[in-house]
Image 1 (cartoon, helix red, strand yellow):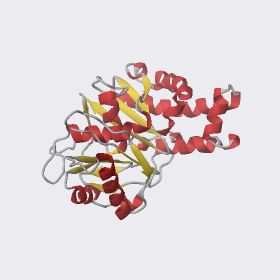
Image 2: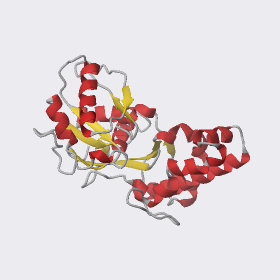
Image 3: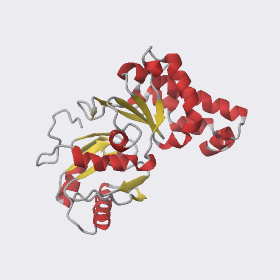
Amino acid sequence: MGGTRLRLVAQRASDGDRTEPVEVPVPRSVEAMVNTIERLVQEVTGGARITALAAGLPGHVLGSRCVWVPNLRFLDGVELGELLTQRTGVPCQLINDAQATLVAEATEGAAKGLSDVVLIAVGTGIGGAFQVGGRVVRGAHGCGGSFGWLPFPFSTRDDDHGQWERVGAGMVLEELAAPWGATADLLAAARTGDAEACRVVSGYAAVLGQGAAGLASIFDPDVIVFAGGLVSAFDLLAEPMAAAVRAHGSPAGSTVQVVAAALGRSAGVIGALRWTEESSWTVDGRPAHGNGNH
């Protein structure tokens, strides 16, 4: 579930055959959300019995409860996992969408086979996730990887946005793009060599790179995976981001590569699917591990 679109995919347990993701506008009420997911499950599986369900959301989730979902505030405090379990008859766990994206990239994408990975998801906001020793760390409260809240020079936070997010999220690039019309127009101009457009994009990418340098220095990962809605602009962002990592990272952190996510828009829903395959379950649908680690 994203701020604007909902995607669903199913996989047959017997042979691993996977459906193509289906996509619809995200519903705008709890009842509509549950009804839509139930309908899509039936449509995608042809009415077959399902054994597990997981849902990725852009915010803080814990067990079956939505704690704080900035783009879908009607879900705050809702036991969405329990409601979906009641409708489908199977355990349903909720997962942060960036954590789901990392599960996908680590199992079949840009970080496949790597042990220690940081993922930065840059779209309207900045989210993230990290993996240590081959396991995604969800944290004591289920929201490990909230990188948008990193303290950042000359920036302030508000109730919904952290300091790094306030200066490095996609919404900032949208504001910078106003003289060209929109973000897509700014990026198109930069690709044609427009000097001012290149300067603006490079400056924006440097802010992302400074944050990435801090994460590289803290986590010492094998790689940093750049994901989210702006992954399509990675060809323009990669070089200035890498330069900032080299300039601001620790001796080891400055050598960490930033690479583009490989699974694109489907990464989050594929990660939720993989979560159902590999998580341990109890009868109430909550993870068996007390810390919620994958």
